[in-house]
Length: 90
Image (cartoon, rainbow, N blue to C red; front, top):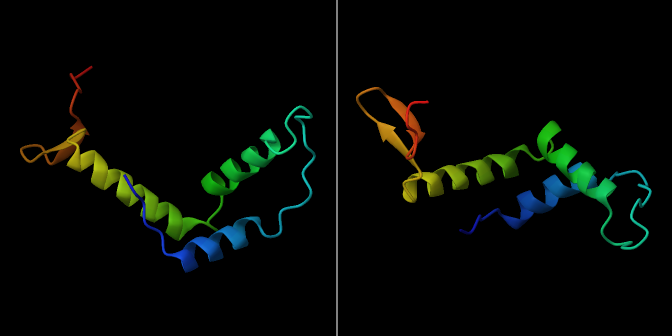
């Protein structure tokens, strides 16, 4: 699956979300370039801010399209509902 995000949207939203990130202390001295506090900041900005909204909507729509294409979720016209293909009523 490929998620296409126009470069200008990707660049603008990432700069807006992370360009003013304050210094973050590395808590992993054995691997200085992979710091969990930075990943926590990325997760926080992705989930809790509106600075990456266009990009996240594009990602969500692509995932939904793939779920439908791969028939992992299906539409039940009789009940006007979506559900997982393996849902058994529990």
